Amino acid sequence: MKVTIIGAGLAGAEAAWQLAQRGIAVQLVEMRPQQMTPAHKTGDFAELVCSNSLRSDAIENAVGLLKEELRQLGSLIMEVADQNRVPAGGALAVDRHKFALTITQRLLEHPLIDVVREEVTSIPTEGIVIIASGPLTSSALSQAIGELTGTDYLYFYDAAAPIVDADSVDKSIAFWASRYDKGDADYLNCPMTEEEYNRFYEALTTAEVHPLKEFEKEIFFEGCMPIEVMARRGRETMTFGPLKPVGLRDPRTEKRPFAVVQLRKENLEGTMLNLVGFQTHLKWPEQKRVFSLIPGLGNAEFIRYGVMHRNTFINSPLLLAPTYQMKKQSRIFFAGQITGVEGYIESTSSGFLAGLNAARLVKGWEPLIFPAETAMGALANYITTADAKNFQPMNVNYGIFPSLPGKVKGKSMRQKAHSERALSKILEMKSQNF
Image (spheres, helix red, strand yellow):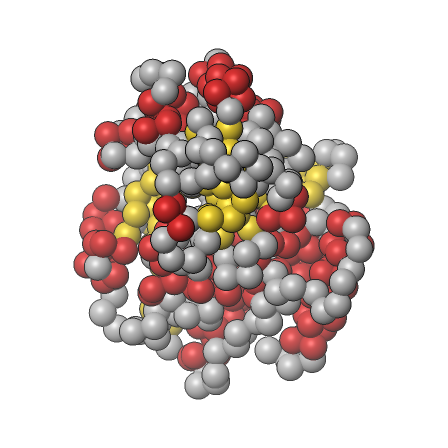
């Protein structure tokens, strides 16, 4: 049986390699260079379009841990990245041309991989399929995916608010409550005086923003407004929107604040909180500077910064199992950024698992669910268990890992404990000889 893979980006390339190395024939379909995306420049596989950095290489860092897991399990992307690395301090950066060229050559030369250069406009009705078409999926394929998943569960842009570590919020200022005390106290509220609000407003309206790419300019016409654009419409506009204070009282004063920024749980454990209504185009250093002016967030640790950009992705919590298979059609897998994982290495991880499990399906074996204590498993678990109503793409970070047993003091010690636990689990997985 031949497995069809749609898309030869990082996820598709990794999936193809994992299948072929397990003796499974692959048809790898890539539309480039016959049809280009607005961001790609070549027809090479695994082309890095935004940056040549694959981020931190330290295993105490969550993305560094994810790289190490992939290395230990035989990832093609990590092998070639290490071969083509360039000096970048503690980060792993690569010569992007040599990197993509090497990946392309390795896949083209593999006897079990048949490469087809054409646009896919419909999803095969038979056989095992991995859809790894990326954030810039073509219109025709997007339509086919919409028909497969239901158009209500297919999205075309990110509009993600920043996420902070819950432990880093100053609880002597912020307080848990819901408006008018209705229901549970589901929001952590950061109250502002008029003076604090004015200081925040001035910083927000003068902060530097990311320039919009031409193909992203339709985003704001979809009813999703960046917080800085809303602010520029008038000094008090935000106080009638996401910063409205009605129904809330500051426990310190027993009075209604001038404005309130609300934080909502991002995961069930409540270790991550997102800033409600704060989708933004601010540059990341500016987000740190400006949003730290919010009372209670002065020392907040930002797990993810807000983003707004073109990004085709599905509602994975509703549609996918942690094996990257569709819940209702187990022969169909999704991999890469279209699943809601965010980042080069995260896409590689999803491609690895989709390829591994597709191979197991061909052989009649049970698909594997990686432990959530591993970086690979934590990502798969997050995208399939997150709140489906507010699902947005996510980078790997320790906030999506299960809590450590006992109390581990200090951030560096917690990171070390997470990485040690994860790598021991990976050794257990390797012993299963998959």
